[in-house]
Amino acid sequence: MDKVKILVVDDESRMRKLVKDFLIKKDYEVVEAADGEEAVRVFCSDSKISLVILDVMMPKMNGWEACKEIRALSDIPIIMLTAKSEERDELTGFELGVDEYISKPFSPKILVARVDAILRRSNLIGNNDVISVGGVEIDKAAHIVKVDGRELDLSFKEFELLTYFAENKGIALSREKILNNVWNYDYFGDARTIDTHVKKLRAKMGEKGEYIHTIWGMGYKFDIG
Image 1 (tube, rainbow, N blue to C red):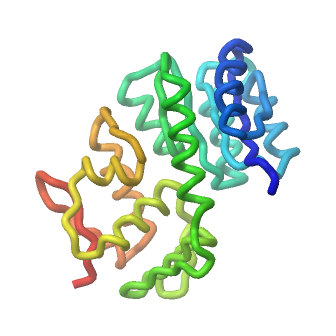
Image 2: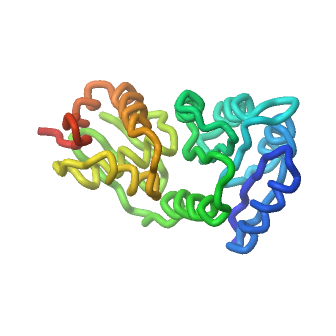
Image 3: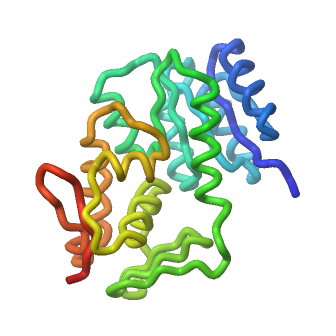
């Protein structure tokens, strides 16, 4: 079986080497790019790339612009690395469809753990694992969601969030529990990360978005009743 290939993008060669060394230790294959333009070229030329780790501050084309270019072509998971930690920067990342957002300095081990979590949830799925509830059909193997037969265009995180809701139908879920299970780590940022994703998910689901009930002061519950 081929190794999972990851694209690491950073204008600092020392940072690329650090991330690459830790990923190789976990048996991942790594390709590199030193700026946003090169990142898009490499991504377009290699269909086997399964995940992108993308720095924000880079010459020629910054990470936000490169993310937009890649997102227009694919729903591949994207992890953003940045020295910025302001809330608006993080929210910008999630609006662009970023799956994880990590501020520098960071622990390479934590970064690899998040890579593991994303790829584990997207790859280690039973071939016949389909959830069907109230006109919403979730094919976990194919990563496809249909509402009344209409396929939805969901980001990786929106798909994971809806799947988690459906798997816990009728159960009140706190924001902390959602973050720990969907984002796969103890998240110390603003809980509005979830609210932003829920708002976009509801909009894409149309009338079925009403299945996601807000529990004020706590979190959410998915219920068709």
